[in-house]
Length: 387
Image 1 (cartoon, rainbow, N blue to C red):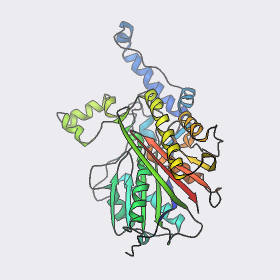
Image 2 (image 1 turned 90 degrees about the horizontal axis):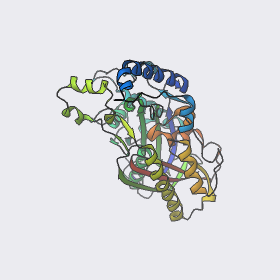
Image 3 (image 1 turned 60 degrees about the vertical axis):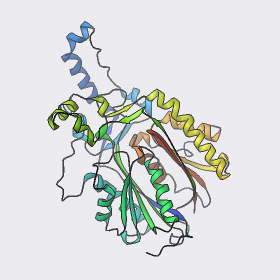
Image 4 (image 1 turned 90 degrees about the vertical axis):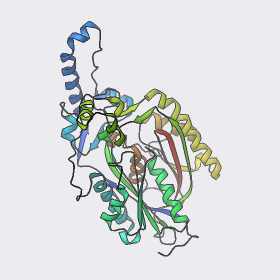
């Protein structure tokens, strides 16, 4: 490998894999309400006695007002809408077959490579950065590396919804240090597998998708293509207000695998996605806004110079408020694009989808901020300049 420590990393291209199936709010609500009605009927005596509370129905209006989400892409639609299951059916594959998460990652990575006019031979490393890894080991990234035919190395990393920006900075450091010519950062997210579809306050939040970012040395990048990386700023501060306790050690808490399955079928919510939504909103908005403002000040960039904010796609109101705090005014729709209506929250992939779908109109020299934030709490900010 011809390392060149004096070269700088650039973002050459992005890639996107979108599942074939989509669930509208109306479809999701119909399934949820059917389950609620059945549950309330089965527990009518306890509800009448006041020992438990009746479940509340959901509505498309409630979902859109709470989040701005209209639909979400999913890897399995039938399992999610089945009121006897309300979770995706993702068949376990033999060990000699490509895992589902790796399959999604490979598709997004190939898209990024094609857009940059590159092949696997041009890449030296693969980083799979996401919230929801399919297994503990071997690393999904090494599996993706093998499936693509990349010589070099790969590793997984997890910083929840900020994984993409943290992965981007890790790739940038590898290239700037001369350790790689090009690095693929891939963000495959099967968020529906850790979502409690029986929880009215969160059953609508997530969707499935995979994105990819190809970084390479500036002396190898195509002239005028992609983005220069002008600076990155990362931050974490511990909070339990967003969490998912289901991990491979969970099994050791059960008497047997069958006991664990029984507890999960009873919707043990503490083992699935849990969020203290109001606390998250109150604490994350000022944290992220301050991070972005301080990052711009550090780089000597005025907010008025920004042409685009590609923010993490979790909640429309949250993004609107963060953009207002950073810009000092309400952002125009094109300045802070929203993809929540079609994709829902896709964890680490959300801000990359916004970048992928909303950058072609930018001119040479235009500045944009790629920003992620989520559980941890974690937040990442990367300043990009159109080449």
